[in-house]
Image 1 (cartoon, one colour):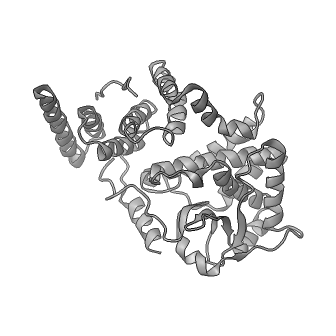
Image 2: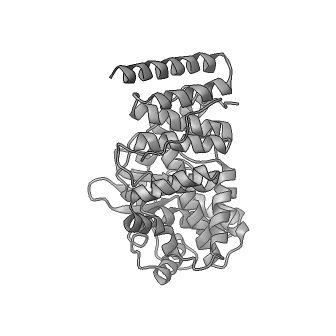
Image 3: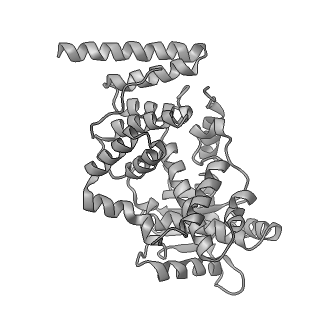
Length: 362
């Protein structure tokens, strides 16, 4: 419960923010929470829920194996999804998990990996799921479970990186994209693919998104639609989701970072954002501050000031000795206005000047 309360307080603390910026680097927000890293769970090494990261520990006492695949059951839904995966790819990650029930009340749908033996599960509340299906159609179950399978298939549980709220939201959109693709392959309609998001309507509004683990409803629906329509692209397959790793192996991370810079210079900002988002888990820790700074600059071009501020904050949190990080954040706060931001902006500008002076002396 403590973790749920923390997330809610963070969401409530985020304020919606209404220059000049240092040029995008060619080398490889508002008061932030005390830490933008999601607290680790004592039982699960990895955990992503369908609408929140709530109450993982409380599910443990109620976990029990799901019923076998007779009639319309979650096990049957999972089996159909796994059969589809088996037909399209040799990747065995998605099939390697256990379906468990959790009687804890509320919208419990989770892809998790336990600590210790690193067993992977998909957890769900049968009573809550039955209620959703009764109010909608069977496609609700397919849409929700396809999302959870997506977390496992995309390897989210294997990444040994501290889970920030920004990274969590990125992963949720990747799983939504995956679920849209799956529903299309299962001959469902776009409305079927969207049914899970529509049925479990507990999504943060845009002004609170920066402090929450899940994106807005609009962003999730867009990701699902992209995945659904991706099926129609030439040579589209589930292996396409893993192409970024193949590119890293074939071209190297530096070449892909240079490609991101080229897209920025060509003013293809959405493409640049899509590219850099995929590279965060592949770069070294020394590259991360500049990655956050560069992504913040890209987001500014897309009028995503709130999210850009979040990235500038993260860059400074990791490395507070780069003048351009403070300059970029200071100019953004100046543009956002209000008395608090103006004062904080001046502090950033002064800090940037001091760092430049120190660099000249050295």
